[in-house]
Length: 196
Ligand code: UDP
Ligand code: MG
Image 1 (tube, protein in one colour):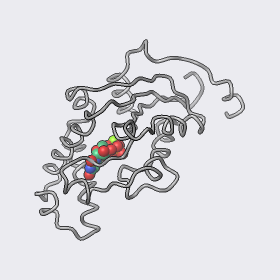
Image 2 (tube, rainbow, N blue to C red; image 1 turned 60 degrees about the vertical axis):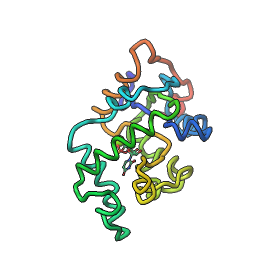
Image 3 (tube, helix red, strand yellow; image 1 turned 90 degrees about the horizontal axis):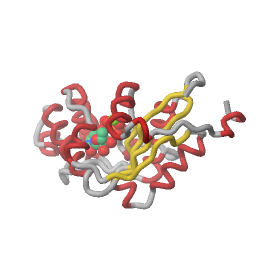
Image 4 (spheres, protein in one colour; image 1 turned 135 degrees about the vertical axis):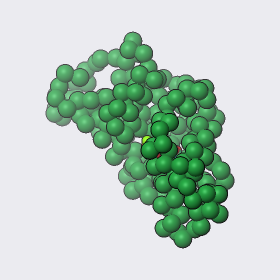
């Protein structure tokens, strides 16, 4: 962590990733890029733990609602019919609850990833939130197929395999939420000397 631009981010293989046997593939993609696992564990989180992991502020919840709304608008699907509301806060609250239901059906694999611009790099490896928008070559683009147009009608979360922190603040909060200081390890990857 003493080298310039090296930072830490929080990553989690979600229940669908665990159930589909993709733990190894997901970790491999980050390691092959040159990023480093510095903490790792499998957990069956409680509803309370998952609920505290996700933000509770209206701005974040509205953004959650908007992600589905954008897809419905693109497809010309009536928001009221699809989500039962045209209010992004109300829709976001529903999605947040479905997300908590989804995150607690099976164990997850939580980890801290360290490396140069780790947060941004991991987000690129993972791909955008909606599988239907994710490019081939990203984890979500290569292994998931879901869309709000399918998920919201069934009143469930989108299955997109991985969670990864988006901001510095999110990373700090999430690392502290899932790991104690003793569970995070400082170690050197000797091949980094040939990389940067
Ligand atoms: N999500 C969903 N439906 C939506 C938008 C999001 O089920 O319309 C779920 C999805 O599992 C996503 C999570 O909510 O990964 C958190 O949303 P966020 O916008 O933070 O996406 P991420 O950071 O995971 O890409
Ligand atoms: Mg997010």
